[in-house]
Length: 121
Image: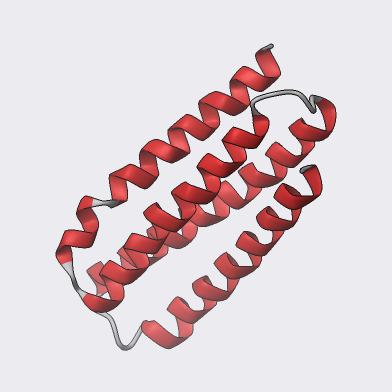
């Protein structure tokens, strides 16, 4: 399980870098500044939580019978919902996507609490 989350974190970081470069070079002239900023927030939070997934992998290797895998799944869910909704919102302009973004944010918060709980126990 630790290898899975380490690989997932590395892959999410790779995708985050690629999307950041895409935004800086491919979207800068195509999106209004406010939509580009929204896209960049998605990239930033994806990168934070890609690193969080690597921390989860390290926690699992240290404490195998812990809640760390739940933290990892929360981070993955959060990246898909939070960052994914921001990417789609900024590119399509469909405003209701912003309404689901906080669900991903709550998943991020749950993931950090679960990771803290893993270490505390």
